Structure formats: structure tokens, C-alpha cells
Image (cartoon, rainbow, N blue to C red):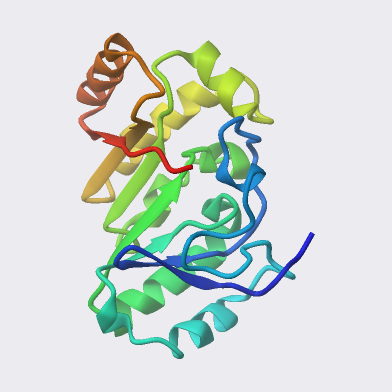
Length: 204
């Protein structure tokens, strides 16, 4: 497997931060099963996990004015490196006027065995969580989370908790993967949690 040190890469008008290749899930639909890079990136399999200083150094080599958002999302679950994510996000908040989004599976409470929601206060403007399906059984079947079937409930609990600390919380599903009835069930879940529901485009 080819590896590189692609820490930052562009997707549309945003700059993405690739912190780790670790993930507690092995999703059946994960893009990294069929590719090793995105359209405008080099290989996203990391030679090693970058330190906070390495990430900051990478930011020093680009013009952030060219991008709308900084998005913590790479070929792994960004909250697996929560300490680095929070340090870099705080540094970005202090030095740049950019909206920060974290794309996550929402399982950081299970990863660390504690309530992680308060840690995002002042660090992220948007938390985007992969809902995938309205069914806990189907969720486990799709994500193959190492934490088991309780992962679905803990993900929803994290979404409910983190909205107390982050202005915008979004749960997402992918268009064409659910029936209209399932999408409506997802919408009702989001309404009950007081968060936004978004159906995002499918990416091959």
C-alpha cells in the first residue's frame, strides 16, 4: 500500500485535515475501500500520524483565505486523535477567522469512555455526524462498529449532548441509499434531538 504525508487536502472550496487512518468502524460503503485518494489529493494513507505541530506547519504553507471551511475529515475518524484535533482547532480559532467543521461517526464517547461533547466548545462551529440509517440493527450491519450494536444509541446521545456546546449539529445520510420512508424516519430522529438532517450526495 502506498503511503504519504498528506495532512491537508482540498475538497470543493474547503480544506480538509487528515489526522489519522484509525477508525472504530469498518463501514461497508467506506470510500477508502476502493480508493487511496480524493479527486484533488495525494495518497491519504499516512506514513505516520502527524503531531499538532506538523499540522500547524502544514497550514503555514497554504493560504487559508482561499477556503471557506476547515474540515477535520480524512481517511480515518478524526476524533481518534481528539487531543491533536482540539489543539489545532483552538490554534486555528486564535489565528484565523475560519469556520471549523468536524465530520465524525459520533462515537468519541465510546472511544474514550467518557462524555466528550463539552470538549468541542469553542473549538468547532459545525459537528457533522454520519447517521446512515434510522435502524440500530441496520446501522451495526453497515458500520461494523467494534463497539457493537450499542454504537447507534451512543452516537445519537453524543449528537444530543454536543448541540449544547456547538452551534450547528448535523446528522447525515446519503441520497439513494435509503427509501423515502427511511429518510422520513431519520428526519423525525433529528427533530427529536433538535439537530439538522441533511441528505448528502453519493460519492463514488
